[in-house]
Image (cartoon, rainbow, N blue to C red; front, side):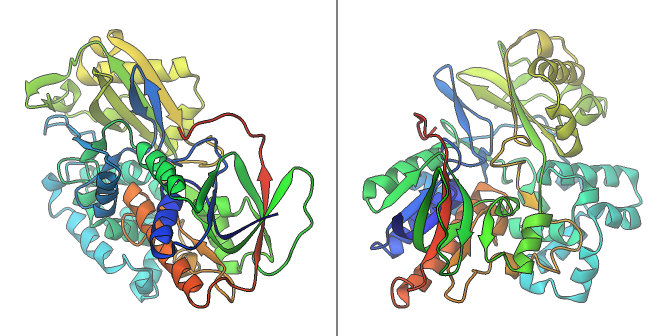
Length: 478
């Protein structure tokens, strides 16, 4: 049986950020990080490509995401500015500045008032939580053009259908991010910068740095199957290992809490969060080309696509709803995001079928066969079938959950001695669902753990976790 002061479940950015902060403020603690995958990074994933790296998961940071930018600087990583298509493009997410007075200001005002779960007991918040986003739009958005832009916004920033998402939670999500302009595309938005060399480097460098300091171990290929969060000590079955820790931090998405057997069972509010929060649906595609056929040569801003000039939407022509020009290993590329219900349909296709659909869509959208004939490589990543993610971008709340169980209770530690703590980007108070939110939630959980440990050292109540050791295989942090 192995013993440690703190066991962190999940070696994504939130778990690693938690370990970093905890090690800084409580250096004497021994920390064990358990990760089910054969790599660190969670929903960031950078794969080698002709001497460069391709980001198949989360990759962007924005100028308002100070923790992420600070951590990038500390780890010696640089950012690259994301370029955009011309202003007349109508399909890479709504052009928020052109839709003044048509509902967006109201959404921002309401969002600012409910960003804190402490406000969710208000009468208007309770009423909003009874409604899906679709319910609210059906009742209050009369203009078809505005409705279309709003539906597109919901699908592209949350990877969810409006019918599935609580209107209150959608407002809170916007509020935690600073409003609609902050989450939108374009300079100053959440997709302003990419990480040079790949976003997963954040996790890889952080993991290596933590282990070099001593007192921190990252163990891969290890999936937690059981947590006894009181002083219970369970019999170990075959092919399992038991870990004893004073404190445990869950740095995984809430739907994954339900994959663990809890002794005693989770309290009803936590169990509701685990069972009812659902993951967004997203597939990411990268098409690499011989030439930058879309480039106008105007300072890196791509020309407006032909379909945009004709006032057609990208999603009218195929599965991709959000499109970004990029460069991979020196070659021009297009990053396409398929989200919400379209992602589930697209994910069922074989790789050659995915390629054909996307390239055909780009050919119609840009008005040139080069979009199809000049493609040299095509890569797609289905996050829906990723067993330890089960979706992307993040977990979301359906109607009725936020005001019942999903507020501050979701972040609240478990146990009379505060033995189990909760991190993960979904539980951030700022930028939930983003890299920034993962770091913020990890730092917050670390401070909670440090406070609990500091009040008299190790708790006499040992928390026992039953951990399944999956067949170890040679692997790197990547």
